[in-house]
Structure formats: structure tokens, C-alpha cells
Amino acid sequence: MCGRRSDAWLCQPLADDADTGPGPVHGAWLPPLFAAQYAHYTEVVAGHWNKQGKPAVQNVLHKA
Image (cartoon, rainbow, N blue to C red; front, side):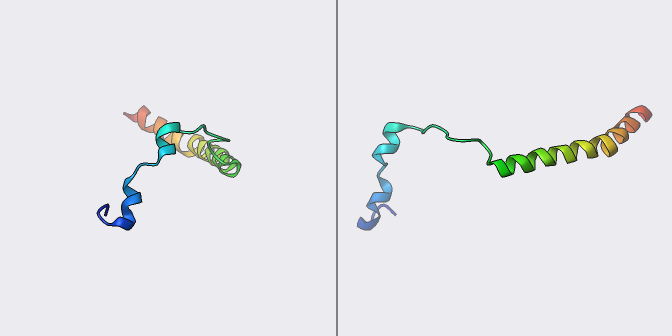
């Protein structure tokens, strides 16, 4: 791919990438909408675990 004259620029590293390194991270890791959905999802999963999963695991461990 680097043999053709028109693709020569693909094979050369960018000067600004090598000089600056990784840039600073701006803003939150998750956008606010995803953060809110994640918080809601964890509440739903925790409620389901406490209602269904935890008693079932305790029952299995008690019988073992």
C-alpha cells in the first residue's frame, strides 16, 4: 500500500502526534445520559438480585 505515490502520506507518521503525546481528557468519562441510564440499571439489577438471586443462592448454600 505504501508503494504507490498517492498513498505515501499514509506511511509517514504525523509530526504532531509524536511530539505532543496523548492529550488531556476533557469532560466526564460517560456522557450524562449514559451515566443516568447506568445508575438506573444498577438499581434495577440490585433490586432483582436482592429479590430473586440472593435467596436462591442462600437456599443452595444452606442445602449443600
